[in-house]
Image 1 (cartoon, rainbow, N blue to C red):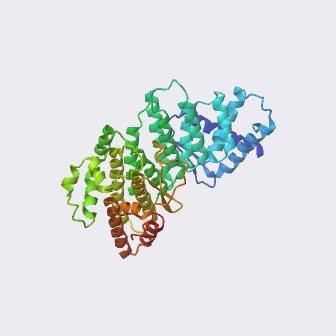
Image 2: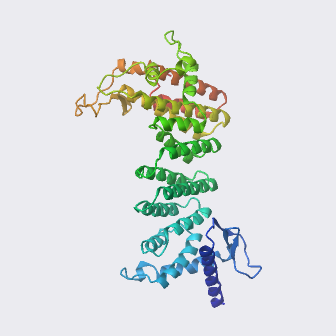
Amino acid sequence: MEEDKFALVEKIIKDVHNVLSKIADLYAFDVVPMDINFQNKSPVLHLENCLGLESWCVKHVYMYCYSELMDKYSPKFKRKSKKISNIDSDRLIRLLNVTILLNPEINSLWNKRRDLVLGLLLDKTVELHFIRLVLSRKPKCNEAFVYRRWLLETIFQEENYERNSIEHLINDELIICDLASDKSPNNYHSWNHRIWLLNKVKTISTYYDPNALYIKEYNSSEKWTSKHVSDFSCFHYHQYCIKNLYNLCNDSWKSLEKTLNINFRKNLVRVLASNFPKDVTIQASEENLLGYSEENLMNLLLSYSNKICNCIVNYVPMCKKIEILFHALVLNNELICFYKYHETLWYHRRFILHEIISIMYEHFGLVRYNGALVKKNCKICNFDDMRQKQAKIGRYDTNHIYSSVLFNVILSHEKQIIEERQKDGDPNADRHEKYLKFVEGFNNVM
């Protein structure tokens, strides 16, 4: 009986290996629930490029493969100087395939595959495809994503790769992340892998222009967040995409507006015109604001230029940042009104407001330090002595912030949304008000 069981396990290992080696288009693996082998045939299932294994044999197959891996291929039972022969490597690969498919959360098994890749016994492209099978069943497997990043690092370090191959790799990674995020909500590992990929693209910008990718990812993440309003991992990635748009060139900016079919300036001036402070000196309408240059619009909103240094202010990127953030604020308004009581939307709102307030502090040459506003010495022109301790800002300087048009627009806009949500009984509105008062420093004006 024992020999029959071992023979069956060996047949299962062989069948899995045959399917993996012969079918290049496999895209999914799973364990099929079945308590007993009714039909007396192989439990390895293959249908329409999907691989399956009946559940009744999983325990026996896994223990058999794992025990042999630990007994014969563990570093404790062999010398480090001993090299793996081709026969041993073929047996090792077969055992690793089955064991990792069933339980991919063991680092030592992935390390074995690293050794095989370094020894040129496993192809990197085939390995990327194998990881896709693993993630189809375990979309939150961090070990699989770590191993995938290691493979991509080695591929990107090769000097003979071309632009087309880079684009193909990037598109494949985005597809893998989409599949993993679809299968498992709040999949931190897939979104974190996506951030790693975009950061990696920045380092190979001589071969690949990342701006088009930033626009594409911003668009896709915006659509994703509108459909998954409780997936904070995706919101975190969307916030990362927003920051990537801050320094887009003019051509890329036009491409962004064309892709989204949105005029960011119109969204901004619409919010400004409806929340302008009641001041007779401000008579600008939406039509007039659309004709303003970036410098005139920023001077209107900030109404003060801090002269603590001699640096020239570039108003174009500052205006683009404000436009992007106000667009995100408008979208957040719609989602909060439509999807009530979702805490994730309010956390994302905090990010947007914090970014806008940070732009104001940067313009006025201030920084919040231990809860107090202090002067920020310019490191470029070194106007003040950098060794001198920073002192608290006087009331005169803070009044310039509180009296600026942008601050009053934000204040009016947030008061309105808080009052509306409080009427609906949303407890997040009260928490948001406390955040603005005691974290962002609005307690003197709210």
